[in-house]
Each structure stands twice: as structure tokens, then as C-alpha cells.
Image 1: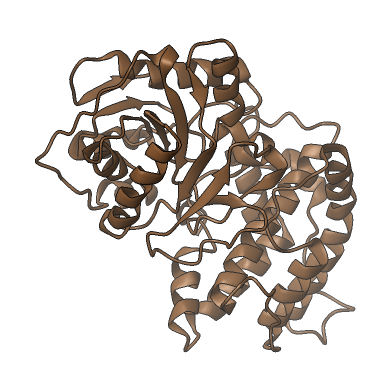
Image 2: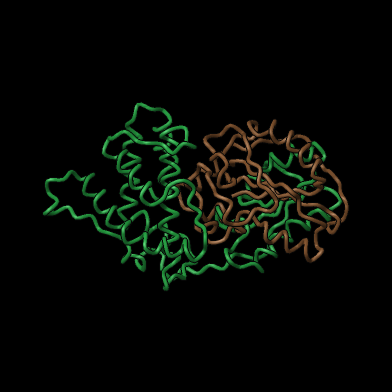
Length: 153
Length: 246
């Protein structure tokens, strides 16, 4: 269904012609084995705590999501209306798999789950997010995170 | 998404990601990516199926085992695709048709749509309230059923709109009210004893083509497009009605 060639028009052409940034560098950060890693989720679904500020535009800002967050605490204010929200309305793990990540930590598959997770609003031009993303790296290191799971919507 | 991976990885944070559009990921070339063949909005595949989500998550995390990259791996499973009824007709009994005949003939078309919307919402909200009670929460962000009716009706009728205190502009308020309205309708559908929908296009087709709520949002879109406010025009153009339902 998300195969580009199977999408109905005009969505297919819209997505096919979206400009994508290119990078000459091939950064590759190393870390321990998976069962020793501390994992944080970064979503681009425009998620935030219920009492936090809704996403207003495409300024590259992000929201902090505490590690003890539950389904009832999280809402979505992504600006796009061109993706399914009914999955998230049934089960937050479809876009923010924190319950699944906690289970993997309990099973010992990953080392631990971060104290903080983050969300951007994904329709934002990448260059608008760069400064915040680079600053976020310091916050992630402060939380001893050595594995980030990036989840689009 | 892939750009974030580049920025974080360059700062020393290892990343892995889920990719929904393989063609974009092939261009951006993030360090580690798992392409999944799921619809937009469902990066983990199947709501309520923790075993399936577990397999997707683990496949993405296993990319940390690679010694070098960039790595782009395809997830081998499709999400189960059940589409027994994609035109929304099974939900038709929840929709309220607009009555363009007497006794409403002295009303404008917009007023008739708003009247049908109010009647429809009166039926919808019993199911919505039940679901809210059962789950203990809703995914609605800012607008209760009454607040959504008021904001959208005031806007359509040209009355001054009152914004919630955390929303800075009418454009943002209308966008979030539209999202909340769809959430109210979907959560109402979830509460029904015959709820078994697995193909989200069924809900979308019903909402946009059978309900008075869909008609109201199309009216709001048209009014936004003719506004002098640039934010409202952009909202009308892009953020109220999906491209595939326009």
C-alpha cells in the first residue's frame, strides 16, 4: 500500500516530486551490541504531550516526550491530512512504539529505554530541523542514549 | 526523516530508522533504514497486533548489527490487507443526509449542511462518549464535539470565531478542529459492536463522501480558499481535505 507505484494519484505524483536532500558524507556512529544499548524514539509524526503546544507550522521545533508517557498522554498535531490517523487512534504503538520498546528492554533484547523521547513535525524542510537535531544530540548523550529509532509517519 | 539520521549520526549518535517511501530513502541514504511496505501513518504496520509490531521494531533495531553502511533493508512482510467494504456503505447508518427540501427551504445551503451536521453529531457522540468512557482517553487534541460544532459553524456562517487559549491563529484552530472532528467520528465508529474495520480507506470514504461532517469541512475549505488571510488560504489548500478525497 505504501509502495509509491501503487499509490493513487494525485498522492503518487505529490510524493514522487517532493524534493529530497542529498548528502555527500556517510556518517556512521558505532556502539555496543544491541542488548547493551539505550534506545530513544524520535518521531516525525507531530506528536506531543496532551498539555504541550500543538505544532503550528514548519519551524523545525520539536517536543519532548517523557519516558513514562502512556497512550492517553500523547496526541498528534501534524499539519498534513494526507496520511492515515485511524491506526494511531486505535493504537499509539503504530506510530510511537514505546510499549513494544519497553517489552524488548524487559526481554533483554535492548539494554534500556531512554528517559526522554522526541517528536518533530515531519513535513518540515530538513534544513529547518538541522540546528535542533544537532542540539538534540547533546541531550541524547546526556541521557546515555546510544541508539535512536527514527519513526516517520 | 533520513536527514535527521545524518545530523544525529554526524554528532556521534547511532541511528536506525523506518522508511515508508523507499525512493526517498534511496536518495537521502541515511546510515541504517528498514523499508516497510505499509501505508502512510502506519510505520509499525498493524494497530493492535503487538507481535507484528514487535517484528518490525526488532528488524529496525537489528540494523545496528551491521559493521558499515549505509544499509537499506526491506521488511519481508506486508501488513494484512482486509478490504471487505471500501466504499463506507457499512457505516452509512451513522451519516445524516442533508435535507435540501421543505421545511428547510428558507435556509441557505450552508445552514442546511450545518443543521444536518448538528443532527449527525448528536447521534455520533453517544458512541464517542461510550468509547471515551471505555478507554479512559481520546486522541482528540483540543475540540470536544460541542466545541468543534461551534468553531466550524461560526466560521462557515461568518461569525467571529473564539480560539482555544493554546491555539494562536484561526488557521491552526480550523486545522486541529478538522483533525479532532475526524477523530471523534472514528472513535465513535470504534465503539460500535460491528466495528471490524481493517482497511482505513473505508472510514475515509465514508467520512468524506457520506457524512455531513465531511460536507462541513469542504465548506470550510472553500471559505478558507477565498479568504484574504494567507494562512487560511494555505490551510484550505493543503490541510483540511486529503488530496485523494478532494
